[in-house]
Length: 268
Image 1 (cartoon, one colour):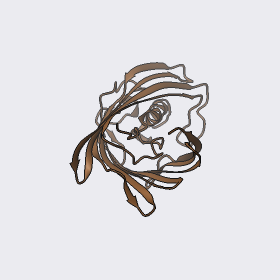
Image 2: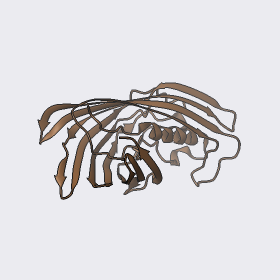
Image 3: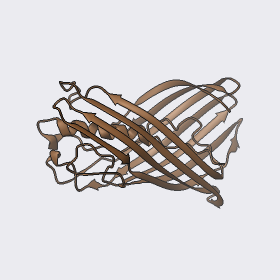
């Protein structure tokens, strides 16, 4: 059975929704605002990221998010009472075959988020939208573990493509879909030696042009920039099946999202 972890699209989707709401209500010169950002992997997949094997894998990632305030382009809180509530669950299906290419198993994956968004803005505007967000599908190679020194090295290379299948309307400030194509190839690897593990995932992100952006922007089209970003994590087994994990996510060469967390993992 395959063990390839999912891309955390749900959290990235929340960032899109919040930014879309903000740009729809801000200001002054909406055309001067930043473009709508695509979904990105925020690092939740990184623990033992490189492992995988032939077979099927089905995962479900439910999540909830609530924002009680919005920020303007200068980082200041927008006056008034605004609230954004989002519930989502992302289905992730993986299949790794036993057919080999370049010594790796040929694999594919599909991710589809189901989202419910409720927006209440300080100016009295309310909006609610629910349904499926953009579909992501990918293909690539999963390599079998091999011994390097006193440790084990595993790796995977995939090309994921996000297509604009989610609900979208240029007249609506809150949307579930991007209305543009996202190409996101990545390379993931893990090296484990005794009780210590190091994992990383390297991404390149490219986005096509949205030729029908929100009418409040006052522009004919917009395009998010390209990006190269890295997620990485380390862990150390404290007890049998219990490990302490350190995760850092989305360090980008041209700006982006960055954060980190400490957590404890248990289980086999």
